Each structure stands twice: as structure tokens, then as C-alpha cells.
Length: 174
Image (tube, rainbow, N blue to C red; front, side, top):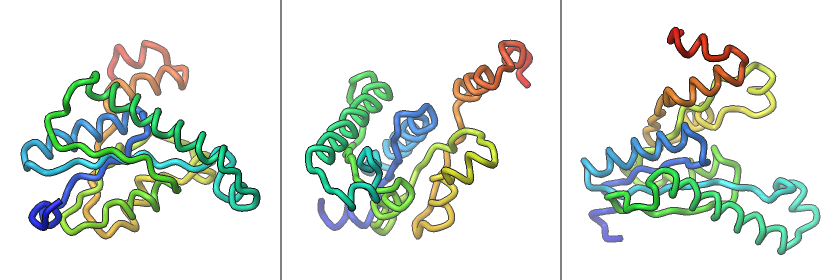
């Protein structure tokens, strides 16, 4: 990459395969197309036993299996996002080992970078306590601009069905 591209920045997108992350990826690609900049799609992963367990008893085959699973998940997410077609922009993809929030901030390290994230789903207090929001973490700690893309309508509808509100809530639009 030459100095002009580095100074121009890029859109760094957190990709997990969720509907929200795919919406963020589509938004970043559309914006990158308008601005003629690169998109870096990042899927963050930790070993299946989490980092603490791995540090205590390192097992290279477990690490390799975790990395391979992350790469496969990233490929599936990109296939779902673009139906196996060319995205229309310079698109780099990386499966990076580390906790999502910290790792995404580390990846968006160039001048002019913009971190793009899906807004996530509505969660209860206990869920937020046990697993804090990656988006909120990045908004608080990133040194670059962070763009959060709202949940797609389909995701909101599916969450309403999961909560047991059924189709009535969906048909009334509330």
C-alpha cells in the first residue's frame, strides 16, 4: 500500500456473521465505493478454551482449529453478505485472535480510519454485565471515528419473535 492510500484511511468493519455485522459491512462497502477507499473486514476470535485457559496449557492443535474455524466463519459471512460476488471495492479480510473490542481498536490504527460496527441487539442487564457490548467498548475507547449501523428491520423482527411477541407485533409495526 502506498503512502497516499495509508493517509486516506479505510473502513475497518467488525464482522461476526450476525445480521447487524452484515449490515455494517454493507454500509462500509457502500461508503468505501463512494470514497474509493479500502475496506478491512475483521473477525475477532479467541481459542475455544478462552485466552486464560490457553495460556495455562497451550495446545497448538486447539489454536489451529480455532483459527481455521474463525477463517471459515469469516468466509461464510462474506459469502452471505455478497452472495459470492465481487464487493466492488478493495476488500481485505482478516481473522484476528483477540477479544473483539480491543482487537478492532488495534486494527483501526491508521490516520483516517473509520471503525464500522453493527449496533447489536437489545440485551438485558444480566447479559450486558456478563458480556459487555463490543460497540459500546469501541465507542468509549477508540481513537478513530466509530460508526454504528442500526440493526436491520429483519433482525428486529426476529428478536420480537424470539421474545415470544409473535407475528402480531410484527404486523402492527410496534
